[in-house]
Length: 348
Ligand code: A3P
Image (cartoon, rainbow, N blue to C red):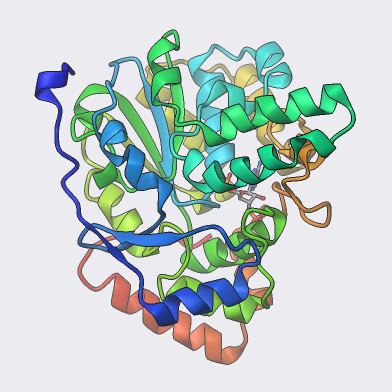
């Protein structure tokens, strides 16, 4: 897209309510994530997103691009690996040696790490080991710099991860490239996001799950409202370049999903290749696979040693975290949120 055809980012933003702000500050221990609401649906975004919103909206899309999109904790990493291996003719050697974060630039991760980077750079000289210092600087470059320039320099085909709602992406995206969106039961997303918010120090959630549930259900967590995010993608599901998946489908019948993704990408899968891919993608193997389990983040002090990125891997695990009141609340919320759509989540 040439400069003269550059589109204006179509959405306004507004400050969040003081009461919301103080509730968020009370429960998230990293004080520097400053949140704003963007667009008519009021998606909650870290403020640095605004600086790049228009660049992302105008990102030049290539026909060979593959985007894996989702709300966080929907099974993005699982889907990314599945897609990458099918698209790259089962190149396990690369998959097992190159971290998924390097194979898939994460479009908007910078927005969470802009302030974190400044803080780390201020204190970088306190780190004695030259090797560790260099590693941290490299990691910050990946995490905190907007990736639009890096993407321009990347060879095709590019694989890109995003948690942005579809309306924040370039309007030509599904007409030009392939998009695979994965959704998951809102209650499982809430539980998984709660542990994730305790894992990543850039959030450092200090409340109980019940507090998190309130935050999530009331659209006070980053990139909520959840159902609006899913519905935007659901509305595009019949587009030939869009594949809409559910975590529950991967969980119930992984080979069936692999076949659907293979068809979507125009790839064949033999029985032997299927067996190996299912084994590679199994929860047990994923948990110990250093290319996908984010365990290396522990070295950089950006995640807590007490939690794991690849955590439980269960559909319907939410039952263990919800009391009767929350269960009923969730049922009402889900029913209300799905009233204006034919989107229905499959039973796991
Ligand atoms: P839980 O926290 O419920 O275990 P994302 O990659 O979008 O952040 O999603 C992470 C969620 O997917 C986590 O859910 C994680 O355990 C689960 N997951 C990742 N790999 C998986 C696999 N191979 N099998 C089942 N679940 C997996």
